[in-house]
Image (tube, rainbow, N blue to C red; front, side, top):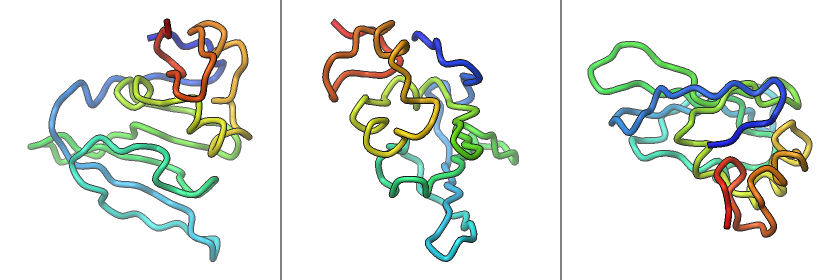
Length: 124
């Protein structure tokens, strides 16, 4: 995995283990709502632009929720390695284009040329 985005911390809490995910989303009325989204690794394209604020993960048997995706204004501060490895250019260009995830230097570093290419994994 390659990360050249300044200010973005990559964590490895999921690490292929089972657990529950919870999303914190800003609703059109302006307040935030937290709800469980299941045990499958979430795709970041299931929310509207600007709605997703945080994704938390609770490992099976653990009482603690760990932050695996966090956004603060126009900056994504934290992303888990498992989420980063699946993130495609199309999702960033469509939903996170006003954040630090949309970074031409990062795209060049991983040889991303199409919208189907991965943002953090080397593309052929």
